[in-house]
Length: 151
Image (cartoon, rainbow, N blue to C red; front, side):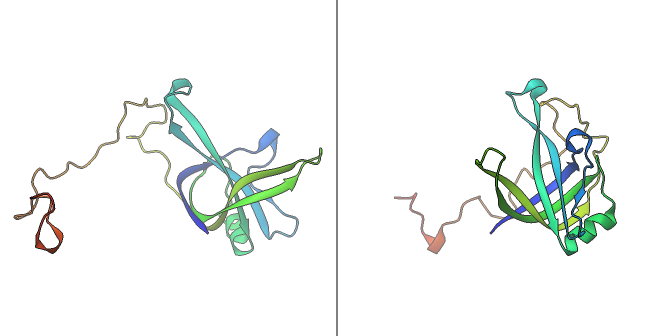
C-alpha cells in the first residue's frame, strides 16, 4: 500500500456544471477531485494546478456527506493510492490513479501572509536557524570512535 497525505487542497468544482461531490445511489460511496496550485517555471505565470481524484467508501462516505463539503473548501486528506481501471466506449482499457480516503478534515484557507497570486520569488516567513551547534558538537562524530576521513 502507498500511503498518501494531501494537505491544504481545495475541493474542485464539478465537471460541466455537475456537483463537486458525487454520491452513489446507496450513499455508501462518494467521489470528488481536489486541486492545489504549485510552482512550475514552465507554466504560465509560473503556477499550475495539480488535480487528484478522491473516493470514499462506507464510513468515509457518511463523514464526507455530514461535513457538507462543497467546491472551494480546503481539506486535508489521509488515504492510500489506488488505480481505477475501466473500459471506455471504444473498448480501450483506461487507467487513472485515485486516492481512497481514510481520513478527512477541514484545513485552513490561505493566510494573509500566503497570497494565492504571489510569484515564485515569494517565500513565507521562516524561523531563523541557530548559528552555532549546541555544546561541543562539531556536526560530525565518528561511529565507533574513529573516523575514516582521518588517515
